[in-house]
Amino acid sequence: MSVTPHDVTLITGASVGIGADLARVFARHGHELALVARDGARMEALADEIVAGGGRRPLIVQADLSAPGAADALVAEMDRLGGRVTNLVNNAGFGLIGRVAELDRTDQMRMIDLNLRALTDLTLAFLPAIRTSRGGLMNVASTAAFYAGPGMAVYYATKAFVLSFSQGLAHELKEEGVRVTALCPGPTKTEFFERAGVGGSPFGPMPMASSMSVAQAGYAGFMRGKMVVVPGLFNKLLTVTSGLQPRALSMRTIARMQMGRAKGAVSKGDMT
Ligand SMILES: NC(=O)c1ccc[n+]([C@@H]2O[C@H](COP(=O)([O-])OP(=O)(O)OC[C@H]3O[C@@H](n4cnc5c(N)ncnc54)[C@H](OP(=O)(O)O)[C@@H]3O)[C@@H](O)[C@H]2O)c1
Image (cartoon, rainbow, N blue to C red; front, side):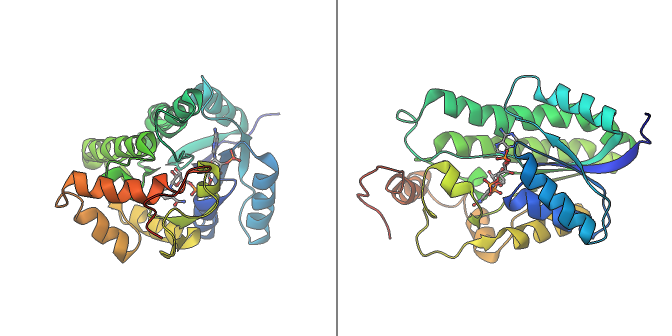
């Protein structure tokens, strides 16, 4: 049976957290979607919710994007399903809390495969369709992109890559009318910290944003063609002043917040 191709916004890491709320926001604004993550049941539930809200049923692709060849497989799957990717939201990502020397080497390389390799490969793979349609690209970076992060050093470095890559690409594509946005959330209430190896937030009593508020700010900035979106006043302040703070000082603060919270760590020097 042949499928009629239609334009979609493809969102990675759309089973939960910021990605799921980005899906809700894009759907609410009339975008047809393709959802990608490993947990098919959660994406089916989200698809049901979107249909109940009046949206078209999203395409669903269950995939581990950190696996070799994941981008090629996803391109082939989108062709098979008839989804033409005109907007790509690279949101899937994870962090690990702990010292580089103590965290598992394979896990850290998997973080690079997902946060950085898959994000770049998907961008390159879908860029021709995005350019043809004058669509756009949203890459989810982090306020971590503006700092060096002892206690999460590889994670911070992956996000610095995402920010730098997105800004460079935004500049290259600006004349063509293709928008590229780096969404840089601060601490946000999702499963991120649990998956990173801490029970709660490493930031103690500091309030965390809701994933919906981050998604709404991201969508609004993306539609306005903003190159960098940092949701929240405090986070904006942190990012604009990052270059003014001596690195040694910011690293000491970040290390104290993060290292004491790693599972099994003795929380010496913990700020909270
Ligand atoms: N939460 C924060 O404080 C915060 C702050 C700044 C930036 N961010 C960034 O925001 C993005 C979303 O994180 P979140 O906070 O929403 O975390 P989350 O609740 O843990 O969600 C992560 C999403 O990524 C998907 N994912 C993880 N590994 C995957 C893989 N190998 N292949 C495909 N999908 C995968 C997960 O789905 P499955 O498990 O179903 O695969 C899930 O949908 C990440 O890039 C993160 O770095 C988060």
